[in-house]
Image 1 (cartoon, helix red, strand yellow):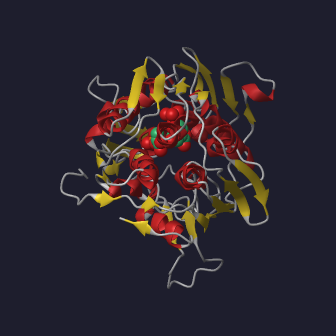
Image 2 (cartoon, protein in one colour; image 1 turned 120 degrees about the vertical axis):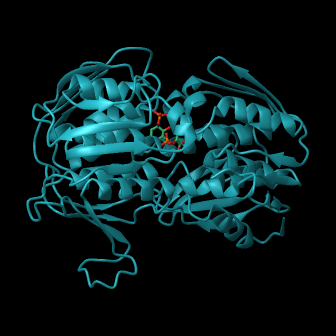
Amino acid sequence: MTGTLEPLWPAPTATDPVDAVVTVPGSKSATNRALILAALADQPGYVRRPLRSRDSLLMAEGLRALGVGIEDTLNSSSGVSGGGDAWHVFPSQGAFPGKYSLAGPLGGTARVDVGNAGTVMRFLPPVAALVDGEVQFDGDPRSYERPLGGVIGALRALGARIEDEGRGALPLTVYGTGGLVGGTVTVDASSSSQFVSALLLSGPRFQQGVEVRHSGDPVPSLPHIRMTVEMLRAAGAQVDAPEDGGEPDVWRVTPGALLGRDVVVEPDLSNAAPFLAAALVTGGTVTVRDWPERTSQPGDQLRGLFTRMGGTCELTPDGLRFTGTGRVHGLDADLHDVGELTPVIAAVAALADSPSRLSGIAHLRMHETDRLKALADEINALGGDVTETEDGLVIKPRPLHGGVFHTYEDHRLATAAAVIGLAVPGIQVENVATTAKTLPDFPGLWSAMLDSAPMSAKG
Ligand SMILES: O=C(O)C1=C[C@@H](OP(=O)(O)O)[C@@H](O)[C@H](O)C1
Ligand SMILES: C=C(OP(=O)(O)O)C(=O)O
């Protein structure tokens, strides 16, 4: 997966304002939650319009390794009813067909490759504790460095047996016994909201349910925990959450059955970021189809953030229509809740007419790469002036020049580079294929956006 052997991708430069309507693939976060909830349900269910990208395919493969049946009905010749663009999920296709329980013996050791997917490395170990058998987790070298100790410690406290040779990280083995006692657990989720989401998602299937109490610095990415809570409730779980009048930093899930449902996945609004940014930096218009009127996705906050940076937007029957004025302003913003939007916002900020200060995002140092360092290094290598702070970036716009933009196997670094490339000729993006972590065929989508505009795009 390293980028060194990949040819460099010449990022197209926009010579005219973009004018395009874009269909963004399904949300990674929603697809992977929907898969987990469907896998733990009492009946089969459908996940429609799922994201098919590295992270979601790893999730599906991981669940299959645990005995879950997942059939892709797109191009399926099996005559499955209600098919189309969906994954049909059968909670147990293992030892007890028809009983829909993960408790059947796995019959041998299951192996799960988490790649570098935070959702897979954090959401699947609790599921593994519910199966009867040994489950080995491994992943990309970077996955060994990403925080996981909170999930491991919490699962042990809730009754699971996990062997990690004292690392508090991958690789590890979960010795599932067919069930987990559950109960109350305290976890420091200041390095990742996914610790909380992981425990809540499997919580209905723990004998005593689960009460997760966060203790530590503030939890980042709260909209993602909100998404977990909303999707659990939609699947029939009873959940108490702080924002609904509950105790601060405490989430409670009552034990109970989950419904096999028919879920339609929203477009990935965080992956809409580079396309909306294209409208902003070229002074054009981009409409993102099927933008939900109401959503827990953090990407919905792009409407406000990019409006502050100089654009305007409206929700139309066709989707979210975003228009740039050609002028881009700097931004002073705390992105603690919406950290995954940072790389594209930083790219836009580097092209703005005034400085930006992005804060509240120290946890990005433990994402796919150290995103604060990577963004500073790469933008500065193009002539920029970016300074890392303890919890963010200060970006002073400077005239940029072309050059190689290294991406560190981080999909969002590559899409950020593409945004800079619209305005700066000669940007060569290393390993653009890394975008496949969450966005299948990003170069194709990007070219289609540029080709649909009355403009010339040159590579
Ligand atoms: O639960 C999720 O789907 C996610 C939560 C966030 O993780 P952190 O809380 O680790 O930032 C986010 O950055 C990630 O892209 C997806
Ligand atoms: C942080 C991210 O991913 P992950 O789910 O691997 O944490 C991301 O997509 O920006």
